[in-house]
Amino acid sequence: MSMLAIIRALVIVSFVLVFNQPGQASKIDTVATTSASMNKTIKAVVITPDSYADGKELPVLYLLHGYGGNYSDWPKKVAGLGKAADTYQMIVVCPDGNVGSWYFDSPADPSFRYETYVADELVSWVDNHYKTIKNRSGRAITGLSMGGHGALYLAFRHQNVFGAAGSMSGGVDIRPFPNNWDMAKRLGAYSQFPERWEQNTVINLLYLLTPGALSLIIDCGTEDFFFRVNNNLHEKLLERNIAHDYITRPGAHNWTYWNNAVIYQMLFMRTYFDKHAIK
Image 1 (tube, rainbow, N blue to C red):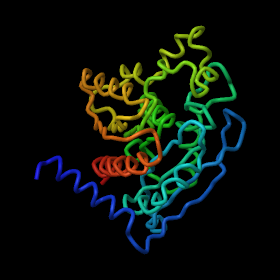
Image 2 (cartoon, rainbow, N blue to C red):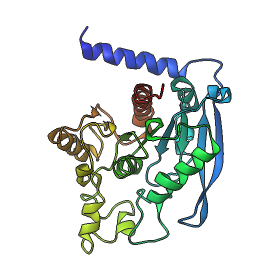
Image 3 (tube, rainbow, N blue to C red):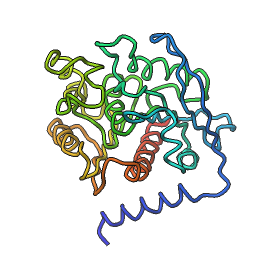
Image 4 (tube, helix red, strand yellow):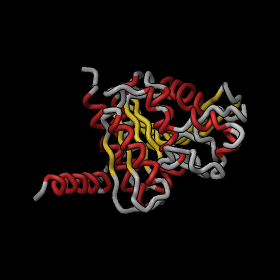
Protein backbone atom coordinates (compact mmCIF):
# COMPACT_ATOMS: atom_id res chain seq x y z
CA MET A 1 0.00 0.00 0.00
CA SER A 2 1.35 3.43 -0.92
CA MET A 3 1.94 6.11 1.72
CA LEU A 4 -0.86 8.23 0.21
CA ALA A 5 -3.25 5.28 0.47
CA ILE A 6 -2.25 4.76 4.10
CA ILE A 7 -2.88 8.44 4.93
CA ARG A 8 -6.28 8.32 3.23
CA ALA A 9 -7.18 5.17 5.14
CA LEU A 10 -6.23 6.79 8.45
CA VAL A 11 -8.37 9.84 7.68
CA ILE A 12 -11.33 7.59 6.81
CA VAL A 13 -10.90 5.74 10.12
CA SER A 14 -10.76 9.10 11.94
CA PHE A 15 -13.93 10.19 10.14
CA VAL A 16 -15.75 7.02 11.20
CA LEU A 17 -14.60 7.37 14.80
CA VAL A 18 -15.66 11.02 14.99
CA PHE A 19 -19.17 10.46 13.74
CA ASN A 20 -19.97 7.12 15.33
CA GLN A 21 -18.88 7.35 18.93
CA PRO A 22 -21.70 6.69 21.41
CA GLY A 23 -22.41 8.44 24.66
CA GLN A 24 -20.85 11.78 23.85
CA ALA A 25 -22.29 14.88 25.42
CA SER A 26 -21.14 18.03 23.68
CA LYS A 27 -23.33 21.05 24.34
CA ILE A 28 -24.50 23.39 21.60
CA ASP A 29 -25.61 26.86 22.74
CA THR A 30 -26.80 29.93 20.88
CA VAL A 31 -25.38 32.98 22.63
CA ALA A 32 -25.77 36.74 22.32
CA THR A 33 -22.43 38.51 21.94
CA THR A 34 -21.80 42.23 21.85
CA SER A 35 -20.08 44.46 19.33
CA ALA A 36 -19.21 47.92 20.55
CA SER A 37 -17.85 48.90 17.13
CA MET A 38 -21.21 48.21 15.47
CA ASN A 39 -23.31 49.00 18.56
CA LYS A 40 -25.37 45.82 18.38
CA THR A 41 -25.86 42.33 19.73
CA ILE A 42 -24.78 39.49 17.43
CA LYS A 43 -25.70 35.84 17.83
CA ALA A 44 -23.19 32.99 17.69
CA VAL A 45 -23.19 29.25 18.29
CA VAL A 46 -20.76 27.89 20.86
CA ILE A 47 -20.13 24.15 21.03
CA THR A 48 -18.43 22.89 24.18
CA PRO A 49 -17.11 19.32 24.25
CA ASP A 50 -18.04 16.63 26.76
CA SER A 51 -14.94 17.34 28.89
CA TYR A 52 -15.75 21.03 29.36
CA ALA A 53 -17.22 20.43 32.81
CA ASP A 54 -13.84 19.12 33.98
CA GLY A 55 -12.66 22.71 34.30
CA LYS A 56 -9.62 22.51 32.06
CA GLU A 57 -8.96 25.41 29.70
CA LEU A 58 -9.57 24.32 26.11
CA PRO A 59 -8.49 25.55 22.67
CA VAL A 60 -11.00 27.27 20.42
CA LEU A 61 -11.76 26.86 16.72
CA TYR A 62 -13.61 29.75 15.10
CA LEU A 63 -15.67 28.38 12.21
CA LEU A 64 -16.93 30.97 9.70
CA HIS A 65 -19.95 30.62 7.42
CA GLY A 66 -20.21 31.56 3.76
CA TYR A 67 -22.05 34.23 1.80
CA GLY A 68 -25.81 34.21 2.41
CA GLY A 69 -25.43 32.14 5.55
CA ASN A 70 -25.38 32.83 9.27
CA TYR A 71 -24.08 31.57 12.61
CA SER A 72 -26.35 28.50 12.56
CA ASP A 73 -25.18 27.07 9.23
CA TRP A 74 -22.39 24.80 10.47
CA PRO A 75 -24.28 23.04 13.29
CA LYS A 76 -27.39 22.66 11.09
CA LYS A 77 -25.58 21.32 8.04
CA VAL A 78 -22.94 19.15 9.74
CA ALA A 79 -24.81 16.77 12.01
CA GLY A 80 -21.66 15.41 13.65
CA LEU A 81 -20.05 18.73 14.54
CA GLY A 82 -20.71 18.31 18.25
CA LYS A 83 -19.21 14.81 18.22
CA ALA A 84 -16.18 16.18 16.40
CA ALA A 85 -15.77 18.78 19.15
CA ASP A 86 -15.78 15.88 21.65
CA THR A 87 -13.27 13.83 19.67
CA TYR A 88 -10.85 16.68 19.13
CA GLN A 89 -11.49 18.25 22.56
CA MET A 90 -11.98 21.81 21.45
CA ILE A 91 -14.55 24.56 21.77
CA VAL A 92 -16.08 25.46 18.40
CA VAL A 93 -17.44 28.99 17.90
CA CYS A 94 -19.60 29.75 14.87
CA PRO A 95 -19.84 33.54 14.50
CA ASP A 96 -22.34 35.50 12.45
CA GLY A 97 -20.66 37.41 9.63
CA ASN A 98 -23.89 38.92 8.33
CA VAL A 99 -25.11 37.91 4.87
CA GLY A 100 -22.14 39.31 2.98
CA SER A 101 -19.59 41.03 5.20
CA TRP A 102 -16.59 39.14 3.78
CA TYR A 103 -15.23 39.72 7.31
CA PHE A 104 -13.81 43.14 6.39
CA ASP A 105 -14.04 46.40 8.24
CA SER A 106 -15.81 47.93 5.27
CA PRO A 107 -14.36 51.21 3.97
CA ALA A 108 -17.63 51.75 2.08
CA ASP A 109 -20.14 50.99 4.84
CA PRO A 110 -19.19 51.86 8.45
CA SER A 111 -21.98 49.62 9.77
CA PHE A 112 -19.97 46.57 8.65
CA ARG A 113 -16.99 46.10 10.96
CA TYR A 114 -16.70 42.33 11.02
CA GLU A 115 -12.90 42.21 11.13
CA THR A 116 -12.99 44.12 14.41
CA TYR A 117 -15.90 42.03 15.62
CA VAL A 118 -14.48 38.57 14.99
CA ALA A 119 -10.77 39.14 15.64
CA ASP A 120 -11.19 41.42 18.66
CA GLU A 121 -14.64 41.73 20.19
CA LEU A 122 -15.82 38.14 19.75
CA VAL A 123 -12.52 36.59 20.81
CA SER A 124 -12.55 38.74 23.95
CA TRP A 125 -16.17 37.85 24.65
CA VAL A 126 -15.52 34.12 24.30
CA ASP A 127 -12.39 34.29 26.48
CA ASN A 128 -14.37 36.15 29.16
CA HIS A 129 -17.30 33.72 29.16
CA TYR A 130 -15.64 30.32 28.62
CA LYS A 131 -12.68 28.38 29.95
CA THR A 132 -10.34 28.92 27.00
CA ILE A 133 -6.63 28.93 26.31
CA LYS A 134 -6.21 32.67 26.04
CA ASN A 135 -3.38 32.99 23.54
CA ARG A 136 -2.70 32.30 19.88
CA SER A 137 -1.46 28.77 20.56
CA GLY A 138 -5.00 27.90 21.63
CA ARG A 139 -6.88 29.62 18.80
CA ALA A 140 -7.52 28.60 15.22
CA ILE A 141 -9.88 29.89 12.54
CA THR A 142 -11.31 28.43 9.36
CA GLY A 143 -14.41 28.68 7.21
CA LEU A 144 -16.07 27.97 3.90
CA SER A 145 -16.31 30.16 0.80
CA MET A 146 -16.66 33.76 2.08
CA GLY A 147 -15.64 32.34 5.44
CA GLY A 148 -12.56 30.71 3.94
CA HIS A 149 -11.47 34.10 2.70
CA GLY A 150 -12.38 35.60 6.06
CA ALA A 151 -10.43 33.05 8.07
CA LEU A 152 -7.19 33.56 6.15
CA TYR A 153 -7.72 37.34 5.98
CA LEU A 154 -8.19 37.61 9.74
CA ALA A 155 -5.37 35.21 10.60
CA PHE A 156 -2.88 36.94 8.28
CA ARG A 157 -3.75 40.34 9.73
CA HIS A 158 -4.02 39.20 13.37
CA GLN A 159 -1.22 36.71 13.91
CA ASN A 160 -1.10 37.70 17.56
CA VAL A 161 -4.65 36.32 17.92
CA PHE A 162 -4.67 33.15 15.79
CA GLY A 163 -1.93 30.56 15.50
CA ALA A 164 -3.54 28.35 12.85
CA ALA A 165 -5.88 29.05 9.96
CA GLY A 166 -7.68 27.19 7.23
CA SER A 167 -9.93 27.65 4.25
CA MET A 168 -12.49 25.40 2.58
CA SER A 169 -13.49 26.42 -0.96
CA GLY A 170 -12.40 29.93 -0.04
CA GLY A 171 -12.75 33.03 -2.18
CA VAL A 172 -9.07 33.70 -1.63
CA ASP A 173 -8.79 36.15 -4.53
CA ILE A 174 -11.81 38.42 -4.82
CA ARG A 175 -10.61 40.43 -7.83
CA PRO A 176 -11.94 38.07 -10.54
CA PHE A 177 -15.47 38.50 -9.12
CA PRO A 178 -16.15 42.27 -9.03
CA ASN A 179 -19.91 41.92 -9.47
CA ASN A 180 -20.57 39.02 -7.13
CA TRP A 181 -21.72 38.39 -3.57
CA ASP A 182 -22.03 42.00 -2.29
CA MET A 183 -18.28 42.61 -2.39
CA ALA A 184 -18.78 45.93 -4.17
CA LYS A 185 -21.10 46.99 -1.34
CA ARG A 186 -18.32 46.34 1.16
CA LEU A 187 -15.40 47.80 -0.83
CA GLY A 188 -16.95 50.07 -3.44
CA ALA A 189 -16.94 49.28 -7.14
CA TYR A 190 -13.71 47.73 -8.40
CA SER A 191 -13.63 50.24 -11.27
CA GLN A 192 -13.71 53.15 -8.82
CA PHE A 193 -11.70 51.81 -5.89
CA PRO A 194 -9.23 49.23 -7.27
CA GLU A 195 -6.78 49.89 -4.44
CA ARG A 196 -9.31 48.65 -1.87
CA TRP A 197 -9.71 45.37 -3.73
CA GLU A 198 -5.95 44.96 -4.14
CA GLN A 199 -5.32 45.65 -0.47
CA ASN A 200 -8.05 43.35 0.86
CA THR A 201 -7.71 40.21 -1.25
CA VAL A 202 -6.07 37.33 0.62
CA ILE A 203 -3.68 36.44 -2.17
CA ASN A 204 -2.09 39.90 -1.90
CA LEU A 205 -1.54 39.62 1.86
CA LEU A 206 1.20 37.01 1.77
CA TYR A 207 3.78 39.71 2.47
CA LEU A 208 2.49 39.64 6.05
CA LEU A 209 3.70 36.06 6.50
CA THR A 210 7.09 34.65 7.33
CA PRO A 211 7.86 30.92 7.15
CA GLY A 212 6.42 29.20 10.20
CA ALA A 213 4.39 32.19 11.36
CA LEU A 214 1.04 30.41 10.93
CA SER A 215 -0.02 26.81 10.52
CA LEU A 216 -2.11 26.75 7.34
CA ILE A 217 -4.45 24.29 5.63
CA ILE A 218 -6.23 25.05 2.35
CA ASP A 219 -8.82 22.79 0.72
CA CYS A 220 -10.78 23.21 -2.52
CA GLY A 221 -12.55 20.85 -4.91
CA THR A 222 -11.53 20.58 -8.54
CA GLU A 223 -15.05 21.42 -9.78
CA ASP A 224 -15.31 24.52 -7.58
CA PHE A 225 -15.49 27.95 -9.22
CA PHE A 226 -12.85 29.04 -6.69
CA PHE A 227 -10.47 26.21 -7.61
CA ARG A 228 -8.20 28.30 -9.84
CA VAL A 229 -7.71 31.08 -7.26
CA ASN A 230 -6.97 28.48 -4.57
CA ASN A 231 -4.41 26.82 -6.81
CA ASN A 232 -2.85 30.23 -7.47
CA LEU A 233 -2.64 30.86 -3.72
CA HIS A 234 -0.97 27.48 -3.23
CA GLU A 235 1.65 28.32 -5.88
CA LYS A 236 2.38 31.72 -4.35
CA LEU A 237 2.78 30.20 -0.90
CA LEU A 238 5.28 27.74 -2.36
CA GLU A 239 7.18 30.60 -4.00
CA ARG A 240 7.50 32.29 -0.61
CA ASN A 241 8.48 29.09 1.19
CA ILE A 242 5.38 29.30 3.39
CA ALA A 243 4.61 25.79 4.65
CA HIS A 244 0.98 24.74 4.30
CA ASP A 245 -1.22 21.73 3.74
CA TYR A 246 -2.99 21.90 0.38
CA ILE A 247 -5.84 19.46 -0.27
CA THR A 248 -7.72 19.13 -3.52
CA ARG A 249 -9.99 16.36 -4.72
CA PRO A 250 -13.06 15.98 -6.94
CA GLY A 251 -15.87 18.08 -5.55
CA ALA A 252 -17.94 21.21 -5.98
CA HIS A 253 -18.99 24.22 -3.93
CA ASN A 254 -21.50 22.46 -1.69
CA TRP A 255 -22.18 20.94 1.72
CA THR A 256 -21.29 17.46 0.56
CA TYR A 257 -17.74 18.71 0.10
CA TRP A 258 -17.64 20.76 3.31
CA ASN A 259 -18.98 17.95 5.49
CA ASN A 260 -15.89 16.02 4.49
CA ALA A 261 -13.47 18.95 4.48
CA VAL A 262 -14.22 20.14 8.01
CA ILE A 263 -12.95 16.84 9.48
CA TYR A 264 -9.56 17.34 7.83
CA GLN A 265 -9.53 20.90 9.13
CA MET A 266 -10.37 19.94 12.72
CA LEU A 267 -7.77 17.16 12.76
CA PHE A 268 -5.19 19.65 11.47
CA MET A 269 -6.11 22.17 14.17
CA ARG A 270 -5.99 19.53 16.91
CA THR A 271 -2.49 18.59 15.76
CA TYR A 272 -1.49 22.26 15.94
CA PHE A 273 -2.95 22.62 19.45
CA ASP A 274 -1.14 19.52 20.65
CA LYS A 275 2.16 20.66 19.19
CA HIS A 276 1.94 24.06 20.82
CA ALA A 277 0.33 23.03 24.10
CA ILE A 278 1.66 24.78 27.18
CA LYS A 279 3.07 22.08 29.43
